[in-house]
Length: 352
Image (tube, rainbow, N blue to C red):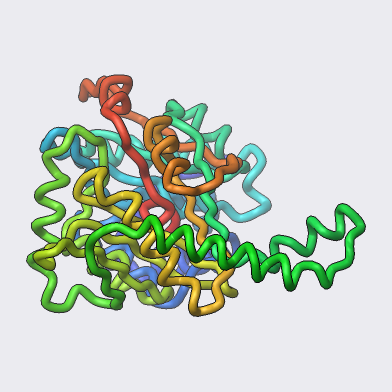
């Protein structure tokens, strides 16, 4: 079957209905209000979307690229993150998948994008590789246990020991964790909120300090934080902020809580001296609510992984990887860019 690939028109009601239908049929995590928020309100620019149309005029597939700026040594790279790759089930074999992704890349190059970045699931990895994406690393899950009871039960079962032992054992282990976090607590004060409030200038100052660093990173200015997390229409995020003795913002993380598991969606820090303090203060703040663990997923350099392990995280690999596809008219030395030290890309920048 032949397919025509067209650029989605935001003013075309048929295109909008087709996108919503593709989401409903194929991407079951889509929340209310996502279309306007993600496709048109992004401060980096409007999302690029390509649609696959059959000979009968039916729209059966889509692929999008969300605008995202990246920085290295103060230089801005205009980029896009590949998102919302959806094809109706009957067209996934010998269908428009490859054609969609190739056309999406061509549209991005026409709009002066420096590179595309993709984080495909297992079903999409082969397609992105055929388009030309080059892997820059695997996603890794980081975990810190802050209450041990639920973790002890399966281990006791494996050893055929009485489950009631989990109670007294967890009480002792939780005290050890609490004392460890208290002993290692460093300087600074913390706040938790759901908006930037009167600290907007401090968020901007932290970003300006980070922007010129040697680390490859996505833009994290106040406009981005406000759009991505504060104004997200379908997820409630909280902001955990670390301040120095003069109440300047020196680090932050964005988190949400699901079934007593704390998910870190994003974090940034002024310099390495604040990294361990940020996480240890956060773990201590999360324990009184009965939360059992802190999890986060990162596409991460070897150097940054080692630093996070030193902070106390344990790691396990995931089945996802990150890849880049460069504009053929641009020269980007990725080995040099990614050799820039402790770079990382968070789940919050990938999963929208």
